Length: 299
Image (cartoon, rainbow, N blue to C red; front, side):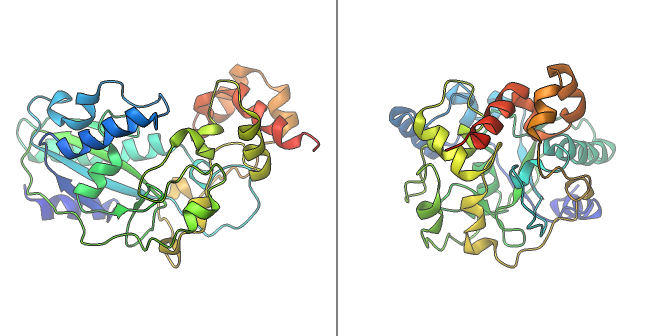
């Protein structure tokens, strides 16, 4: 099995932004992560064991390569919404894992003794770093991965496996550094040097379970978003004239707005039943209700 044949199979599934990276310990990343920890530029949602974030063989002993894939989700929909673009369609964890499982089933049929582990936003490794190393995109000042075809509106999934595919190289490209994302970030989370304080990111604030500060409340109220934030992507010039997604689950049955009366009336159990297949549901009804109440409060 060669890399070209693997990528052809991805294309048959409608996925054309795929790369392969290796499994060496990433000491450069270790240095960056230690600096972030020292500065307290962490949310607490990260993998707690640093070694697991930089060493793929901690996750799979006989790992020999990592297949990385970008799943585009952008659609041209300018209708008003109180939800971030990424969570309006079916939960990307579900969609991406199903597609990656098809890839693994295909590889299992064609490679004797093939073993693998699939991760979509829930793995210990730093998925954006893998996306960069595998050549599917490059870092923006806003910390997002930018792809040529879909801009930064992509989810990242990866397959750690025991087959030695030939590796791809990082792209020889970089962010325009126009500074718009830094200027317009509602929480002033972006520091302008490819670093950020994620605790100030509105997307994190809308998911935060602890008591919110007055500044955080104000950020939610001014944004009109009850879950997530798109501003740094919406102002990014790299996201102009990008291709829309072709993944059906991100195009149909979209939820643009959650209504306070509905959320207020239903039980936690009913909330999970109605919205359990959406990315915004993982934090539960209580957080969603709190955020709607903040936005609806009179100034």
